Image (cartoon, rainbow, N blue to C red; front, top):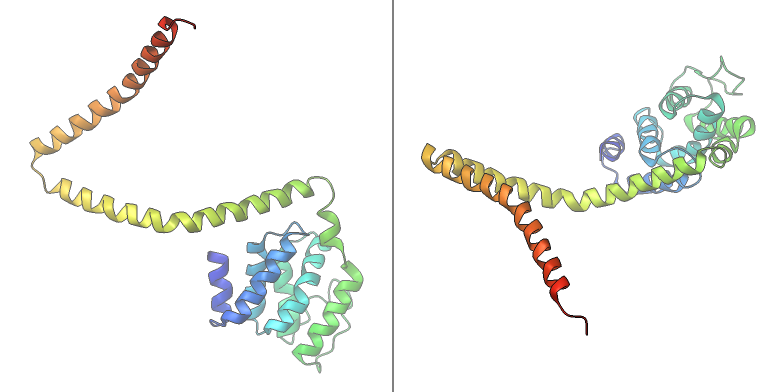
Length: 215
């Protein structure tokens, strides 16, 4: 939710662009080790630096390859790439010749930098996802998505439960001390006897089963 909120805010509420970039992040998660949350945060950072939806879509795969090849996290890579495209500073110049010049527009820089990064680091993110623990990390990312889906379903239920509990606690606090002690005593007795009754019931069922003649 945090990653999605950051991206949506950076896009100034452009829902169509948000859905497009989120979909790209989810698809890239299937073939790389980058979780969609990390990708969306990087996309949001690029959007904050002024890159358009199409420019972000273009540069994101190359950005992941660059991060993998350089051994840096996606946020750091996004900062270097974003500053290089969105400002007059070539933040990548100390690492390699980007082929950019100050006269280029942001669109021209995006195209040229995508080509340069692809030429130097193309395929790194996908290749490393197939080696070593890569498949396990991909599985973990997928399980994370499943738990997110479960969480989305549970949130409304938890909120409603919380509201009902608050009503109960408010009502409980307004009771006199004797009534409160009686309720607590009943609750403790129930908690104690509950497991005991289950055990006794199981024993009774077992005894009944033993005493039943075999036909």
